[in-house]
Image (cartoon, rainbow, N blue to C red; front, side, top):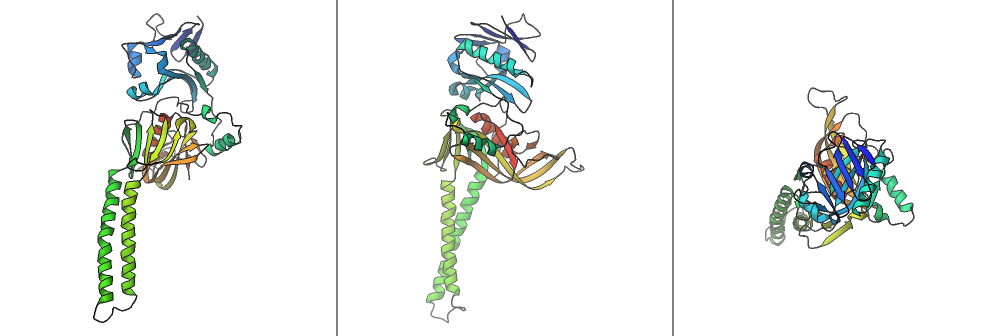
Length: 380
C-alpha cells in the first residue's frame, strides 16, 4: 500500500481501502478505516470529534472530502464535510482528520483524493489564498470572471472548527443557538429600552396636546407668544410619531437566522413573519467584520508596545455575496475587546483572535465557520 506521512500519523491506501494510523504505534487499531460503503473510527478518535462510536459512519453521511490551507496555523488540513443532519447532532459540519505543514500541500491533496475515491464522495481542494487578500479585490475579480458557476466555489469550510461559547452578548444584540443553527437577534435589554422609550413618548404626547389645546380654547388672555400653543401641538405630534416609530422598530427589528438545515442565511422581521433578505450558503463568498476604534489604551501598568491594547469600537458584521453585495447581519454601536499592539487593519486581512478579539469578532468567526467561508477583518 502507498503511504503518506502527516503530523504524527501515517495514511495507507489502495483502490479498496484507506487507513489512518498513529505513526508511533503502527500495529495498533487504525484511528480511521475507510472502505467503499463506510468509515470506521477508533472510539477515542471518534469521541474527540463528537462522532458515533458504536457503529460505522455511512459514506452517504459525508457531503464531501475537503483539503484546505489554514492561514491561522500555516498548514494544510484534511477533513470531512458532513451532511447537515449529522452536523446538527454533533454541533458542526467540519470534522478534521489530519494536518500537514505549509510546504506539504501535494501530500494532503493526494491523501484527500485517495479517501474520496475509496468512499465514492466528492473531493474539493481549497487553495492557499494570496497574501493579505482584500475582499473588495476578490469581489471585483469574481464580477469580472466569466459566468462559470460562482456558487460552485462558495461554501468552503474553515480548516478547523471554531469553538466559541454561546450565547455571545453584543449589547444591542445576542448571538445564540437555534433549532436551525444560529440566531442573531435583538437583546432583551434593547427590547426593554425601546419599549420604555415608546411608552414615555406615548405618555408625553397627550400631555403636550392637552396643554396646547387648552391654551388655544381658553377664555382667558391668550398665551404669549401666540405661536407657543402651536409649538405644543407640534411637539405632541412629534412625540406620537416617535412612540409609533419605537413600537414599529421593536416589532420589525431584524432577526438573522444562519440556517444549517436549509443551508441559507435568512433575515426576517422580529416575529419572523416576513423575509427581508436571504442568501444560500453557496452564494456567500466570505464574512467581513469591520470595526472603527473610538478609544484604545494599554492594560494598567503597561506601555502596550509589543503587547495588547484594550479598545472600545463600533463593529459591523457582513456576509458578502457577489450577487447581492454586502449583507449586513448586525451593527454593534459599542463593543470592548483587545488588539495586538502595532497591528494595522487598514486593509482587510484574515481574522485571527490572536490579533484582535472582541465579542463581535468571535460572532463573525462563528458565522463564517457555520457557513463554511473565510472570515476577514478590517478597520474603517
